Length: 195
Image (cartoon, helix red, strand yellow):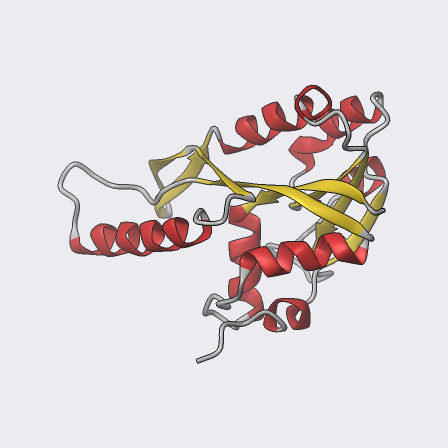
């Protein structure tokens, strides 16, 4: 019988990658089938998906663009959370003004993922291998910590070796994980919704 796994998804990273693969438009695909596929590649049964995201920024006045963005976000989240295998974990978005104009940063999302990762052994004692979908080196300390409990981390990520690419990947993250797999456009397209 195959061992079980948990999937931890950095939604901001996955969204950017989907948009990159879709050449500026997000690919529309069945997330749960995609996550199950990643687990099955490792001959693991998917027990739970933790999906880390943040709702889009909403000002006090709620302009038209913000309202539409929030409506789209709510529709997407309501769709994916119908499946009990997926648990949505939400931070918040902070708006900052810089010399480049408006910038938006997610707050609390990495903290939620770190907290859940460190509690894996307590909440899911049967799990000894987990899947992490990200490119963020901030998770290296917690990955090293859970290794002490005998839990292996399989990193699913993407890298571009182009100057100034948003998909730069530090070897620090690669080195702290037990195995690294690279996400491919064809794997997402395989689970596209039929038009």
